[in-house]
Image 1: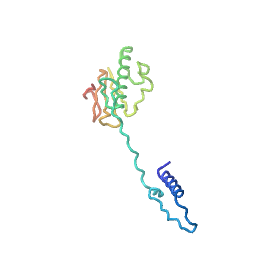
Image 2: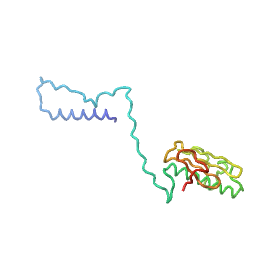
Image 3: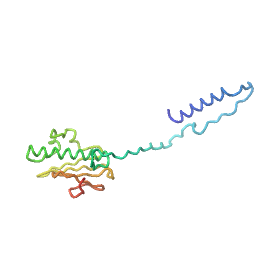
Image 4: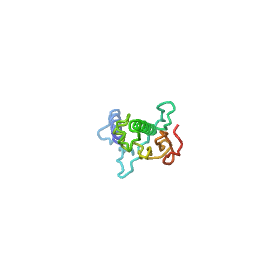
Length: 174
């Protein structure tokens, strides 16, 4: 029930209880006038709906000792990067070169077909093949202190930036 309906129901119940407790009146007595409290008045049309209250996310709990992530989204992004880097290393051991695409990594290590999608929730994946390597970047859809951008290449070192796209010159993730 919405609030107005609840208030009307409550007012009706209270009025019924008041009548049951009131002393008997003569048939010629006039009952007191009733007024509708402002809370139970009909809603005004075209009134803006108040925004839903925002629920603050609980602080991020590290997933392992030394976890560099600042949010669950960052933890997922970093986990994805580690999986791609590990799959690239395995691919190179078997093929003497790095995989030319994310699709080529499917079934290498724990890299699955679903992981080839470039939309990773709060992040977008960019993969580029190079002559003797690759570049992998995860860019958040919204840059902020809990959504940094990440970059890695064939050396396997993950770099991060808070306010711009990460590159090989960005600070490394500890």
